[in-house]
Amino acid sequence: MPDTDKSSSLKMPVAIPEALSGVAELYTEALRVLEEMYEAQLTGNMTLSLEKSKWQEIVGGLVQGEAWLLDDGAKGTYRTGVQELAKGIYDLYPLCARDGRDEVELVLGKVFAPVGQEETSYAGVAGVANWSYGPMIAEYDKHARGLAEELLKSCGYKVFTLPKSFPEVRCLDVFLLSGALNLTHKPISVFYSGGSKENVSSLSHMTVFINLYAARWKAMTERLASKYITGAGALESLTDDEAARLLLLWLRGHDIGHFVGADRLSKSMSEQDRDYMILHELKSDMIALYNLKRLAGVIFPEENLKTVYLAAVAEMLRYIRRGGCVQHPDTGSAYLAYRHMSDMGAIRPEPWEGKFLVDVERFGQVVEDFTVSLVKLFAEGNSTQARGFVNSWGWLGVEEDDGLPRGCPDELRRMIADDEVPHYLDYVFKQIISCA
Image 1 (tube, rainbow, N blue to C red):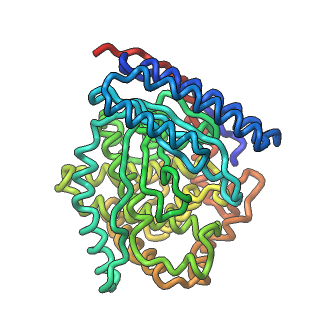
Image 2 (image 1 turned 45 degrees about the vertical axis):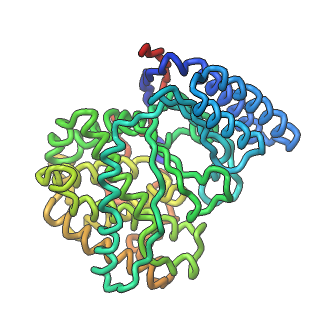
């Protein structure tokens, strides 16, 4: 990780519906206890008896939330959720409290630890449901299966390997993170199965931390683009809502991309293999862009496609600045995407200005070709070819003293080392009671 890493604090006021403010307080207390569990785990002081005791403390506090709810249906749903939590810790599990259309949600349990470890870590998040983006997601999903079939046809396949359904999406305005979700690099979404054994096929729920996602864009990605991408004015002119919609469209395509196409590579490698995970992220990144090209003029104005591509490059650079190409598959994916796009002439460094120039037309064509190649790579399952691509620009796991891959281009090194743009964000949450 670069030794110039820098965090910046960002105030995050979140409106809490007055009728659910008492439940929000209970959620906050639950996540405080969960944080204690996480700290005990990190220090090696967690025992089964302590875990059971702390979990019972959490559940015991949450039971009180039902008294804040007026509707019998809402009470029943909440009670069932608490009863499920009382059974023990699985992967992440959601608990919703509803008052009319207003909802506050707590998601807590365990998530997988950093790459390379099989141990799970205590984690949780609480937030207010944000319904603003539901119609847009529904519109995207109407086209998702057809887009996936079109892609597989272009790969020459007659049998389409697709799931029966894609993960359901909820957006939250987060007011607290805890445990393994409150790390230096804050996540902007979680997948979970909601009680069943955790594996890719069962991850049927997706929760997006939309206020954190949009805030990260404004505080980090937009600033990075303004300084390092030629023509970034198109990104700076986006309103907060427009930026959130663009990000959410890309994210939806990315997460659907994980489920598209045959995967023989997992058999010749392993789903826990570093190179495999990096390539899975890369395939999904490209499928997201592949889909957005086809949705231009359908669910967003066609002339905004250039903005989409510039945003993709800006996010690519932000992920690269995170460091740890080996430890973090999304960082490794961004690094490989940049190297490939650079080789293909879609992204060029401008040495005199120190910026990156995106050839939008070329970028779109490379996305087309690259997406097809990656889908075929997974379908064919050639692990030698897969590892060869990952290490096309030098052994990804061999890092220099600054934590960057050996052979990392100078233009990236300069951008990564810039401490005027934060590498990470710390959120300072403030709950504001909102009256109806």
